[in-house]
Length: 200
Length: 288
Image 1: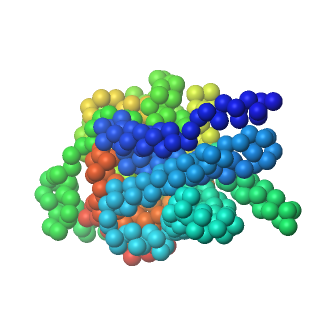
Image 2: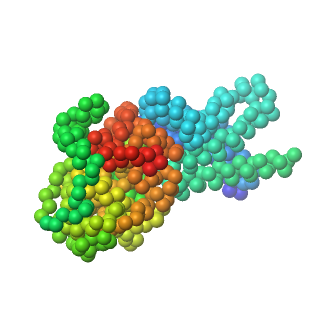
């Protein structure tokens, strides 16, 4: 009943505001960093904020199908916007790290990428998300064919847990927040893999 | 005043005393990228609003508000172990007769950010002298007060513990801070008494000290107990020895803003001339 109600309401709400909100949010975070509103270490604040938003959106994207299957709530039309917004924040997060935090200190960037597991995990997640973002449009679905496209996009099951691990491994102390994302990411992916296996 | 073994200047420091004295002044060190003279203090606002003090929460913004719950008056420090005059000293008695000095020190967190802090305090050596360090003492162990009713934070094995080798403790740079920018130390910065060892990572600079023990064995320290492969006893700032999970080659400067970038981390946080003799011959990668 509630599911029907939600579906009725969302039928009238388009997906494009998600892009607008994401952009505005990013602009606000950047503004807070420039003006000192985000505190004494704005680079760290911006890195964390963009990373966490990216991770949250990635996890939100993974919730869409289970929500539809088990609760009857259909938010499928928002998934592309959620996924692309996630990619947007992930790329912002990566750019802040590269340009503002490490400030193009290439020797340290190379060293970090080759020696630090949590940086390697982050880089892996970024690389996996790129082809997914590039193909997040109707043209790609048509060009590749629905089932090939769907198989490619199963790479999210790899990218999201890697991103959650990146956050956890990079945290100085393992607090509740990274653990929650780990549980959500791995839980959702394992549930999906199990479902796929069942259907075979 | 009867001099004991602990009053003897460490040999290495004695032999290098001229270099040491020259570098303690405002003279720029030859070849040093950042000299003592160009230390611009970080703003008071930044120093007092960006604190790692897990007794009051994990977030760096937490201590500024949560630490106000700590009662710092009355305060006493228990000094025990291998000392002539063990006991529980009222803070005022501990500081009586000692001149509070202004010390502008670099502060480097293990998380790879740094500040410049204008501390006010007294040398630790002067405080230890009041208790009278005995010959057998090799290390100084410290404890932060632990008041669960005032400290809601979790995550580490309380009370917070730290320690120094005796020569590190007696070093002229080692300060017991009681103030900041000429004002009493704010609670989030470790009031009413905290250690400052500027050539070591910030976690060595234990806050709200309630106990000092002179001991023979290397004391257990909180971060080392938490993750021994990541946090060592010495924790000397060293751009050549990385944290297992991140590099220590450079640091962000707190207060430099969004476009502040980074600066190279200096060996011993820029205090190499003053403290390197303490570690002569030591493998600094093994003894991190």
